[in-house]
Image (cartoon, rainbow, N blue to C red; front, side):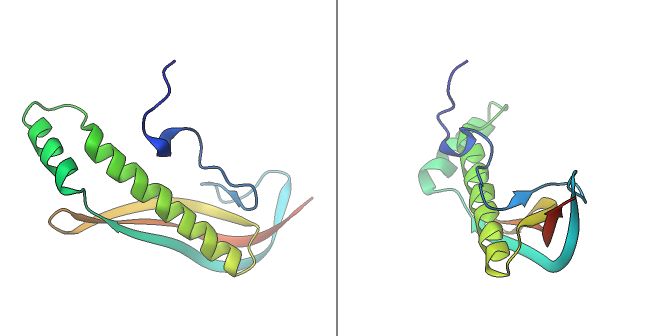
Length: 123
């Protein structure tokens, strides 16, 4: 299998200090304290070069690699910012993690990674 050229798709989001799950609980652990919502927000638009190539490729249809790279980078950065927010308030886990994206100006998209920061302990 060929390695992806996109540096954000090399593997899972690596994180060795805070457990992150889209679920509402962590098997084998109990939530000791809820610390609140944490988030990472990034606003991105493609560079002129990527926008030009992406617009050209839209004519043919299909998957547009240049846009994928912008989206993956934005999600990666938003995820990292969310983790930093959780560390700042003393969390060791994030439950209910989600991504959201909103285009608020032509060509500019907000990407939000968010979840509930908690302190968990093994049962």
